[in-house]
Image 1 (tube, rainbow, N blue to C red):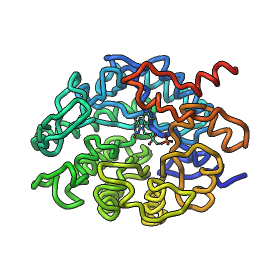
Image 2: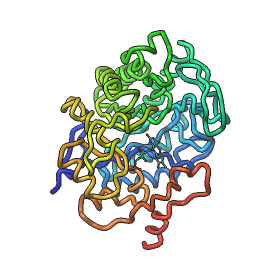
Image 3: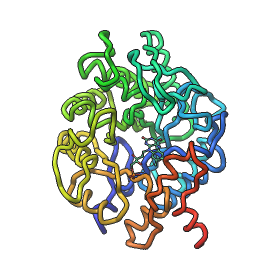
Image 4: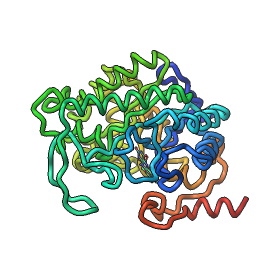
Length: 360
Ligand SMILES: Cc1cc2nc3c(=O)[nH]c(=O)nc-3n(C[C@H](O)[C@H](O)[C@H](O)COP(=O)(O)O)c2cc1C
């Protein structure tokens, strides 16, 4: 029995082990309807069967305008609940706790889906060229918060154990918390408390509407714009009722804020470890990034750098990866080809998964 295979309590839920499937959009699995379909149900069920203690279902749009593209899953209407019921049933069947990541892309929204909105008007270089974002009014902020809350209520109806607010990687919640994107002078900008407010108010509302057993997590940026600032924002999330922090990258450089060097721990993982030290058991903390082998995962968990790990590409490549980590069995390795990540722009197939399927 390794420490990786010991249970951990998060809120009122017990994860059977410390391995979580990180949220990872399957860019080409749904269509403009945003429905959770057979492919997505099978995808998540297979990964729960593969031993993950927690599955965090991919960034799911809370409005049709807040998507990466037209093939991005959503929970913006009640018709979308049915497919999610099957995802949650599939994951629960194999003993995984299952939450869903709620997102709006903000000023990185695909223009085919909606306008580039954000906390402040800024001119930016995106991969589609230069564009100017539209500053959200207070009424628009409140309407957007309502969309997140409505999606969380739908998530509960669909049987999810909780939700995760997508607060990193440069999307709307990250834009609000980051001094690099938020130049407001009202209650939603300025101090860390104010920059956290957009998400904190949603956390409190979801807690009120979904009850004490509904797990509320934030995947937060550990680097906007300093480690201390990112921690101050996360403190606000925890004060509002967040019970689980997954720490990832944001809009500022990771390297400049990485708190320590250990040849076995990457910059982004060390930021997660710093968060764990800071929160000191008040809420469990997870880290992510480059975890491809059982040894790396055991190292982080055994040394109590973090409480859980989020693993993306290794579990995309082989849904049985978590079982392999725990049982010491073999697995198909990620080929590091990035095809999964750049799926929306290329005809892609994960070669590792294809190899696994061929060898069945
Ligand atoms: C195909 C793909 C889709 C992703 N989608 C999301 C997402 O929906 N939400 C999110 O927070 N991160 C997303 N990420 C980032 C991953 O969760 C993870 O942080 C990143 O891949 C680093 O972890 P890894 O080295 O284990 O892959 C995605 C990554 C990939 C490769």
